[in-house]
Image (cartoon, rainbow, N blue to C red):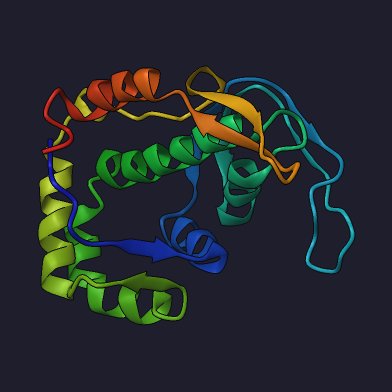
Length: 183
């Protein structure tokens, strides 16, 4: 595996902006989604209705797809967030956009500057992008800590919480990071 020593975080505006800069993403929606209570920015609702199947999404729709949870749960939301990340990667690599994005990176960073937070400098980001393009999709192992790896628990104060099933969780971590993940 590759050790991670840095971070890149992006707020919602950054996600929508990046996806729109790339011309949208294609996501194979695994099942119909109907979230009539998806929140809008005015404390109301902006219903999200998506049919199962391949969908081309702009930044706003991809963000809604990643964030919705009224139709299922937080665990499925985590899986959808991973789907959006894969779609972003695929968009850049399928269109061979990486070389032009690297050339445009100073202006892209200026455009995204208000919405992206990182401790990487521009040269490090370019090197990371060049490294990531050479990693085959089948070598990227995602994981979601879902209901299989946790159990319900009530604290002495009465709070309902989820606690990890440590023996099972270490199996998941080994699947994702390999047997030496804790080193």
